[in-house]
Image (cartoon, rainbow, N blue to C red):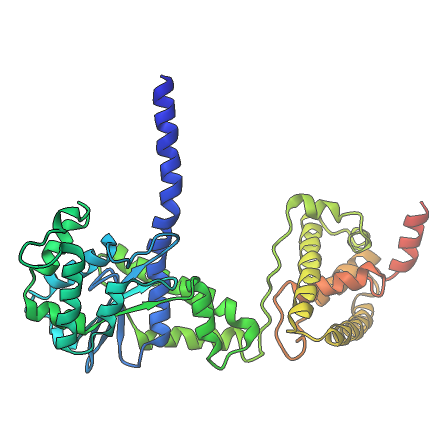
Amino acid sequence: MATSKRSGSSRSKNRRTEVPGQALGYGLQYTRMTQLLLEAPAGSFCSMEYLDDVALQQADKGTRLIQSKSALAANPVADRAKSLWKALSNWTSLATDPDYDLEKTAFEIYVSRPVGGELVEAFTKACTLEQARAAIAQARDRLWGKSPGFALKSTVADEVAPYLERVFNAAPASLERIICNFKLTHGSGSPQADIEALIRTHPVSLTKVVDIADHMCGIVKRRVDELLEAGRPAVIARDAFYGWYATYLRKIDRDTVLLSRAEPPSDKESRGQLPKIFVQQLDLIGLPFEDKLEAVSDYLMAAADRTTWALSGEVDGSSFDDLDAALKRSWKNKRRTCGIEHGSKPGDLQGQALYSNCMDLTMPLQAMQPPDHFIPGCFHRLADDMSIGWHPDYEQKLKVKKAA
């Protein structure tokens, strides 16, 4: 029994070691496709798990087949790497398909971080059929040994041997064309950072880059998943992608919208705010407990947004002072109107009317639209320092309550 437990523990350990790399490899395809769509020319199409891991198709320039490789530790394009020779083997098999025009097909291995190898670099540098032929001979001599004896062939790892066999025994003309059209590309080590760097070259606000990258990666993954679930090829038109891209930019950029990064407070955090003055002001006008919790949430999230926007430079600090002054003026005018319209009613009902009018107010901040919770949260901030109040006699009642 003890041996079984140790064996199980060992298997668990192996899974923990392998799974991050595997998950990164799967996720990389979505990220690489997003980057490809951002770079793709108008009228082209990008696909995932259709023609290859990822692919780009252009009606006039042919097809670009891309094998995407993550590289947490190992080098997937080392001279004896299985992934390198498996990719080449797959492409040599593809070359036998009469539907593929090798002259108009580019073959690419993309690795998420800078890596290389003597043989893969020789393949990349081969720009003519003669150079490709020489690079193939170099690889065969290195891995199999000189012809005709191929003395090193028996030293090739079992997991790599079948792929080498297919590659070196492929039709020479096809293999030479594949190598001639082959290139190795790589990322910086962070595919997400690479997408952000690409978006920064576009005319967008730097403070919005991360939000844009997150959104576009998410929409690509969702669209691919929807297509695959429907049993359809995961193909996305570049022009459709840029339509989604432009729509999202209009929504959050051009300095028209402020995005909240504040998280809603937990129940414990909300209850911890209940003794504060702005909540006591809600007690004076008889609001239910649920409305108080909503008010606390608005107050905390607005406070977090004020800090975040000031630190990021999205909003100048003086703009918050201008907003507070405008809210006080608006409260004063609404209070006068409520007094005229509801002066004959009890004070708590007058306060509820004033509170409702203020909570419905929309006001820009530095000519930008803030999220829905922000203006209510700012009103609560002013109510907390008693600059404003809801009950007609809020100052006197709060003093009595404090004295008690």
